[in-house]
Amino acid sequence: MRCLHRCVVAVFLAVATAQIPAQTPQSSPDGRRPKWQELMDAARRLAVTGQTYVLHFKGDGEKRSGIYVFYNNPLPFCYTYMIPGEWVRSPGQDGYRSQDGRAFVGVWFLLAESLVGVEGATLLERLRNDVTASYEKQLGQRLAGVELLPFESGRPGTWRWTAAPVSVKQRGTLKFPVKILVDLGSEAIAHITVIGTADDQDLARRVVETFRTTSDTACYLPVLETMLRSMRPE
Image 1 (cartoon, rainbow, N blue to C red):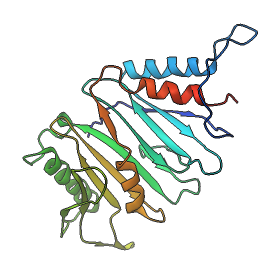
Image 2 (cartoon, one colour; image 1 turned 120 degrees about the vertical axis):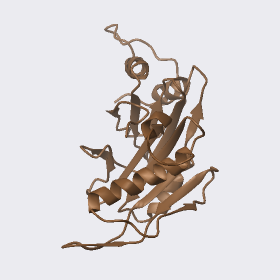
Image 3 (cartoon, helix red, strand yellow; image 1 turned 30 degrees about the horizontal axis):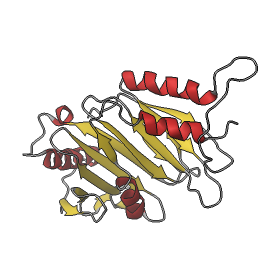
């Protein structure tokens, strides 16, 4: 299953204060460029090569921490979303885990070509069948009670994949994690998996409600620049 982007490159920024109004930066006495300009250059290079730019932001007080993801290559479209909370990259799992390692969240965007050959009349049906087939292969047994149920969120076309718990030798009864599928039209579909948080469905809902997509060639680079300019240098 090939994602819309080739890989995720994380840029960790621990910010001790909340966002402050953007100001026109000045070059340092030694002539170096402002840090935010260097970060924007890196973001543009990643965009050209079809990779996402991930910004870790830690606010203070009432400001929420979160991971802000920007895909700024307009082929076929650009997107951005946020995962609230404090997370670290989860090597080998293509997602993020909590600091204590007990919770996991993954967000993937799939192109139509990623699901070629999978049975189904729509991308939603194909992804449902692909998720089901993947679990059946891993577990070595057929799943019962597979359904796509409407998932209440601020974005239409959002569904939850569910299946009946299964019995696994030496592991007991296995309940499946929260898996949310977001219909993005004929070109792509999003897939969210959340497990181990205090409220997995709520976190998935909050992620879905931050989804933004655009075909504008400027993508979300202006938004990212505003965020980087507003951060106080370390």
